[in-house]
Length: 284
Image 1 (cartoon, rainbow, N blue to C red):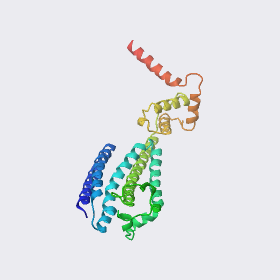
Image 2 (image 1 turned 180 degrees about the vertical axis):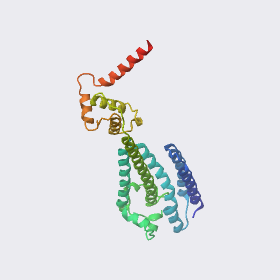
Image 3 (image 1 turned 60 degrees about the horizontal axis):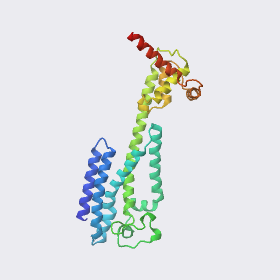
Image 4 (image 1 turned 180 degrees about the horizontal axis):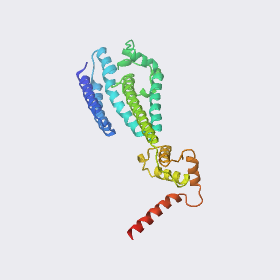
C-alpha cells in the first residue's frame, strides 16, 4: 500500500471518528469537514497525476479499497446536509421523507445490481478492468457521467464503490432518524392517553364553535409545540379538559368560521375585549 494513500485514509478515518463522537452532529460540523476534505482530495488528485504505482496489485488496492473509503466519508456528509436541509416539518411528512430516501437507495442498488453483486461478492476477475487507469474501457459500457472525466485520478468504478459504502452509512443514519420519530410518536401517544385517562371537572359553557375557534387561534399562533403539533391533537386535549368532543366537526366548523359575513374571529376578539375591560376596571 502506498504510504500517501494510507496516511490520507487514516486522516479521514480520524476525522470521521471525531465527528461520530460528537453528540450534536450539526450541519456546521459536516460543512467544516467537507471544506477540509476537498482540500485533501485536491492534494490526492495532484499526487495521482504524476504517481506510478508500479504494480497492478497496488493500483487495484488503491482504487478498490483506499480511495472509495476516503470518498465515501465525503459523500455521506454531503448527503447528510442534503437530508437535514430538505426534511419537512411534522412527524408524518418527515417519516415519509426518510422512508422515501431509503427506497431510493434500494432502487439505486437494483439499477446497478451487476456491479453491486460483483463488489459485495468479493469478486476479483474484472479488477484490472475496473480499478486500473491504463486499461482502455469501452465507451459504450461506460456510465455517461464518466465520459470526459480525468483518467489520471480515477477509474470507472472507484466512485461506484464509494457510493455503495456511503449508502451503507446513510441507511444506518436514516433508519436511526426513523426510529427516533417513531419513538417520539409512541411516547407522545402514551402522554396523550395519560391525559385522556384523567377526568376533568371543568365544563365548557360556551358554544362548541367558540371552543373550536379557540383551538385554531392557539394552533395558528404557534404557541403549542411551536406550531409543530397536529390540530386534531390540540382539539382532543382541550375537548377532554372541558368535557366536550370537538374533533368530529373540526374542519367543517373552521370552514364555517372562514365564511362568516361579519367578523371571522368574533369569539377571540370578545376574549380580548373582556380581558382588556377587566384590566381597566382593576386599575380604576
